[in-house]
Length: 115
Length: 114
Image (cartoon, rainbow over all chains, first blue to last red; front, side, top):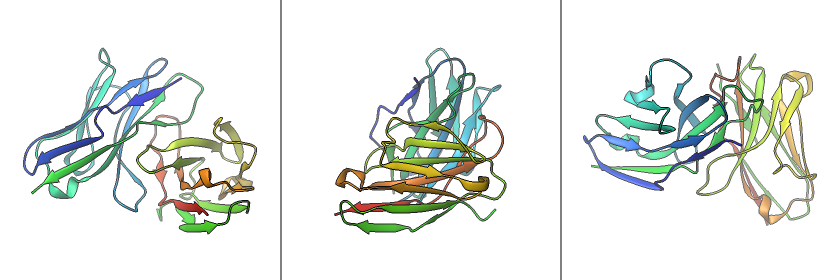
């Protein structure tokens, strides 16, 4: 079975400061990892993904994420937060080698950027 | 791309009634997913289609739930004899290619069972 843990329900950060949203995963074999963002009354929007190669992946709106195989983590980061980054963030995993095709999501982290 | 479209956006129904939701994926996307999301939770997988074939179903998908994707284009999700516990946001997503590609989500259908 595959699973995702987002240990923080809520992250608050001041505008202009760096932000980190944490994610750890469990999956058979190698993982495909994804981050999505959800604004109120909107669907999930894709931010970035890790498939293979460079452990640091860059995505939309200045976000990046670092894959750490030994710690089974895929934390989302941004060097300088904006108030408009305030939203609900979801990490998701799929096995690269298993037969399951579903994306398994974490429970989400509410990011609030304070002006 | 016009995006994934879901209809209706909102549905209020009485307990025991049947409801049907429609999803129109992005054109030429061969993969289609249905998820359910309740307040404060992440999306939970319901079912997966590759073209017209339903290849995966979650144990969450009880006998009251059925999904179809005729001709590999749009998909419908039907819930029979709705219960209050079915109240949730139902999300559809589509993708192209293999399992290493991202899925694109629609805005969802919010179901309220009264």
